[in-house]
Amino acid sequence: MDHLRTFLIILASFLFLSAGAKGKDAKDIKYINDSLLHVLDKAVADSKALREQRDERINTLQAAYNSVSSWSVRYDIAQQLYQLTNTYKTDLALHYLHLSLNAAERLRDIDKADKCKCQLMMQYARTGFFGEAVLTMNEINPRTLNAKNRIAYYDCTSYMYNQLAFYTKDKTDQDRFRRLEKAMKDSLLRITPPDSMIWLIYMQGVYSEAGKYREALRALDKWARLTRPGEHDYAIVEYYRYQTYDAMGLNDEALHHLLLSAINDVTTVTYDEAAIFYLCRILRDRGDIDRARSYVKYAYEASTTFGGKMKDWATQDIESINSKFQNTLQGHNRMMLVISVLLSLLLLVVIILAIILLKQHHKLHDYARRQKENNKALTEANRQLQLSIEANKETNRHLYEANVVKENCIATFFALCTHYIESVNHLRNKISKLLRARKFDELSDMARSSEEEETALQELYGQFDHMFLAIYPTFVQEFNELLTPENRIAEPRKNTLTTPLRIFALIRLGIDDSGKISQLLNLANSTVYNYRTRFRNHAAGDRSTFEEQVRNIGNHQP
Image (cartoon, rainbow, N blue to C red):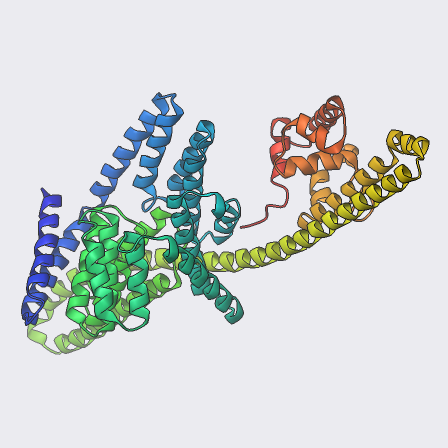
């Protein structure tokens, strides 16, 4: 019944603004906004029950997933679970995306696998895990995607570069990310049908940036016809309407649409939200501190549950509202002091006032204690947020270093290919000369000789060692730390690996199959198996997880 009432209020307010767009009374809009604030109050108060209903739906689908063995059905259920969690809990959303990807790979359905990777990239980017988003992007070849997945790919990459440009502190990097974002948007708009949802999303942004707010609103109206209250896209439409009306200076209309967005987010258990934070700013500036604190508390709990990295502006809102509340509390305390002094001069009512003040003192003491606890929790939250910001900076630094390594590897790859092409040309010319000179005996000796093959293999291994150690410079040291002291490998020459180290270097790169390793290193299967068994038996820790620890060498991101 409450959900129906919320839906009807949202719908009625939307129809009112649409019908009265010309000559509408500002008092009517303010009245509706006050009603929507009460609806939002009720939704925030009921948020725990709404969250429990969402958890129950997730548990039901999880049980259904565990009870079936069909990978096709599992894929469908995992996608449903992702849709329930992608704006609710980041860790669950990523978990269900990995389950979807695993099911798609089991089904050998490339299109479904590509879809899952695009979803993973978007989830990482939305939650601030840009390193993981870039790694996922590098696994996708846009040329091989079908039309729908290609649109999703360019949408994801455009959003990712937009967020990187927003959060980076370096002007050069910001300009570079803006250029990449524009390139992705241009590619997206070239393949997106006009008046589709994606096309409308980007066009309203183009119109808004150009100051063409009426055109932006028309694009949003078309987009709104493709969604309805209760859907996440509806909240996004209303949020963009808020931004547009705010840019036009129509504050009441802007607040109206911001309230619709916030109500939709709260009632649909959407914790990846921005509307309620901006609403807190407006309430704070209007002096509605109690309501602002109530919303900030909900928004902070929602953001913590979601698991994304909180934005700087969200932290500033919390600190600002808390500071204003502290000022109000201090004002109240000063007033009480003045009243106490004045009342102490009235001898006839000292006893009565003493009783009243005693009661008030107990209430204020409890109130101050609760506020102290809340302030302590907020201080800890602020500290955690600062740590997250520092972690983001460190992640950006690792990303820059990874890009440098990638460029070096690409250059080395081309140099190696050029060298092999020259070697092949040299061998072809040499054979041609021997054939023209009819020196068949020399040609036969050359064919039987393995010297050329051995030389090529050694060059190949040398190039592999150099590239691998450029990516994982501490591989040998970290590998030795996984072994007991008496069984550790002596460090080889600079930029070289021994045969057992090459075997585990390939395992670090994700190649687990012994047959494939033996083929790449020109070794017998038994040799590879014996090396793997011997070093596993010499592990300093749990033998069963030895190779898993090898795969994690070099993973030092916070």
